[in-house]
Length: 262
Image (spheres, rainbow, N blue to C red):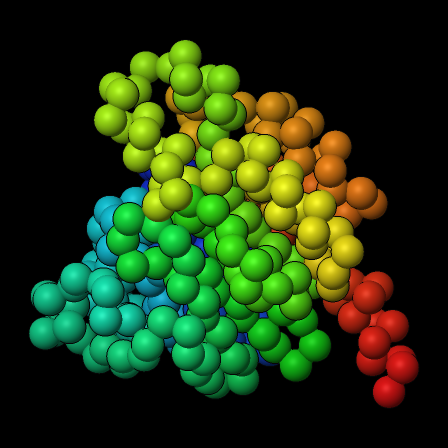
């Protein structure tokens, strides 16, 4: 299993998860042309292979603005939950509806979903092949226990570390936007992500990738330092803002030990 992170952050989010011959585009916050360039920078190509499905986590523009373009270019079915307002996509293309919290199959893999707290109906996703599982969670104001358990069942997790509290407080955002980011329906701070990392370190997860970092209110070094201090032996790495990044998903030692036990 591999994840081609085409872009992460406020300038657009999109990733291709590839496993057991199946490809899924998670989020469509950048257009097809930029996606093709990013994929080639990672040593692969989108076309003519395309995707087997497109899954959008929520309707904010940095995750869904280019959905219609990708649906047209790839002709792949689009999986949307009812909280995503995409009338043109629903009218013009093949849309398969599901409820947040449900799971569904895309060829050889299973996509699990979990509602998370945000100011738009939002999901975390976990994509599972025959032997690997990756969890992706961005845009959540806090991480309830059920979300931690959902992510903790994954070998690899991509989790937002959006802002440093000190930088947000002293930064350029107007007061109402600072309150939105730091609120319970906003984004995770470095400290909140570190709390989640401490719990994940005792679960199945072996590798944690910090994503969706704010350019204005955070830095890779601050995020890494804060999270690593509480992540134990779990590997922690930052996904650079807006740049292609490849994640190789390997089974964690915990998962291998569990399989050997049976």
